[in-house]
Image 1 (tube, rainbow, N blue to C red):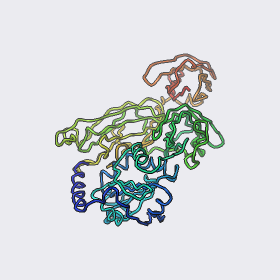
Image 2: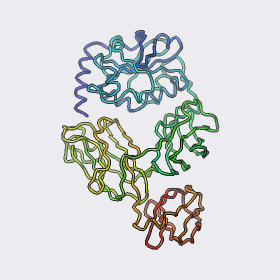
Image 3: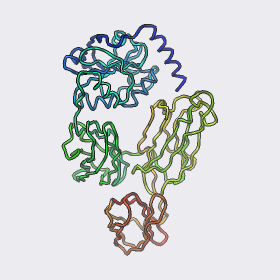
Length: 487
């Protein structure tokens, strides 16, 4: 979307015809109502001893969107705002009088995306505030300490904002300890039972997290989990969880302790587990990933992961062009690049992750192509992202499609085959009326176990490393393949 930057530079030039308020000036007071109907008074916040961060932006502004996508201001809000130690107030101010609630919600022209759904702090649509502060470009980020003096802070990352406030305001931020937020999205693939998924956690406390405990609740079944971790402030970690989840029941994750202490705030403790039904399914192991590029293919990468978070395939970056200093154009620009992928032969849901190294998504095209990804199986498109546009640096699409293992025609003779527990710490017990040959391979394709068992037999796999394996049970000419997880 680099050509868009030229437009915004033109806007910035026009804004700069008026001088911006000088650093060290007394901050103009205001009382304004946010889009949710809540009132905000600058002087009231300052009288309470709070520091105010004012982010004056515009919905059409690409650099504003890119800064939002870094999550820096959201980090400060969760750590030091009302969801944390309540020392800092962060306000987003829509500074363009010609835009409104539709543009803030990503509707219609004059906007680069949905600003509302992923902004946790208040949004104020009031261009008069921007006028009072005489801004010369978007975004302009101000620091207003309790002394009431305003300084431009700039688009700083989270840790630098903390340093800036600690250095320039009258007292250092206190923060809180043991303050972790469970990611808003925990999604598992539809199945009769699910045994492996990821829980993403972000540390908003002022201490390192080295131990985390939570319960996985499926109906009345509770699986307590404690894991050693190493998560510093503002860092995020994905925790691989092996626990039974029945898709027909209500399922959730409940945080119970952090570093052996209660979590700081209960509002972040519980997160529902969404059992997702993929939009499409296939029984073809050989698929094609059709990558529809924008004008900057060297910024584009993608990954395909199964429902355990294991990366199955990836692609990009693609060949840069020479149209400009950003690598625009070239043979891989605004075209479809076909990548051949072989899926492992076990039932799984697959998620896509799209990345853009510049941070403005896959958006710039001459209209000849809608950038995104199609999944094609046996010449049929089974899933399409559609036109993805400016998604920032990363777009995750959970459970986009499902692969169903392709059993042989005689598969019904193994209908009574089952095994448990899964996950296992070593011992695996089989329920089957037939004697079976069992082969187990790792994800690199290496055969790590092969042997025969009698009907309703058992095997000991305790010598294998923990991880995901593929188990194939064979009776005569009939096979059945399933995932096996060893703790």
